[in-house]
Length: 366
Image (cartoon, rainbow, N blue to C red; front, side):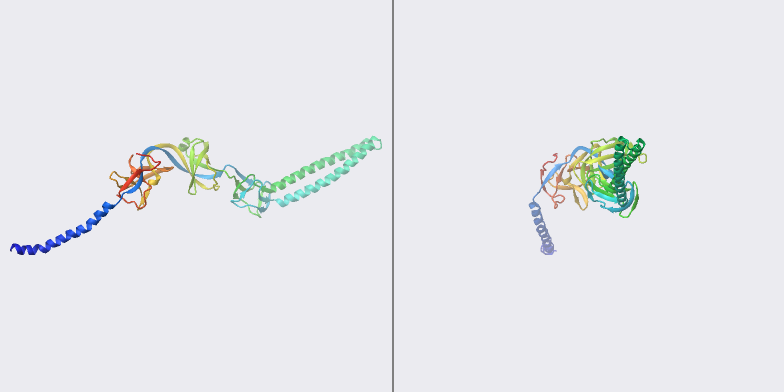
């Protein structure tokens, strides 16, 4: 084979290889140019800082009120009217229910009539006593006659006094037949309905004042770490409020061996009486890494942070978090002290994207 024939034979292969190289160059050059043109994304960073962190335990609690009154019927009878329902707002003196009202009104009418009758007898006895006193002084009536008339007068006076007491009792009974709110608040429970017949002492309704308190039962170890004045947090229906412990009961429940604690909110807030509350209690502390809560993001359902790398790029890092306090969150695993995380990363930030980092205002710096 001559050199010319060999050259002619391999020329198509050389041309094909050259075309492939040119095609590859045509594809890669624009990518390389585009990569060079990508501008760093401006981000704010904060350092993961080791700090003392309170150890918080969560216990179940319930919402009560500083003022709670269970209203009852004193004398019982038929419930003729219930003026409220559960959840009604009431003022002091508002009518709650009428119980045994018909009997109480009848007793009042009878007592009034009896007093009028006894007063008439007394008036007549007083007139007779006055007349016989004059007759006795003029010797027109004997001492025995006068004393008999005077005794009748004294008896009539006693009868009027008794009738007045009976009328007072009847008026009191009428007052008790109208069960009224002792203070302003909310009707937490309505326990009777119109038409019911109840006995004396039967609960009618529960009135809760407008100032809530929260009750919880805690074990001995948690109780030992608490005292009145300690801070707590109260969560109801997804909302959280700061609170302070007001009562720690040293006596334990013999059945559960738990202690009662009571808390008051530090803000003026209405909470539903009897609602479930999640109570956060601080019982000591520990040393953890903390980062701004705004640094936490989810990518593909995984919780993590973007770390600002020394190579000028953002690197997504999976982390395991602990409790949150204010705008900081504890990081249990996944970060080292001093590493800088991106605060409020842009939604489009991707792993290995170039960044231009600056310190976030109001955050810890490494």
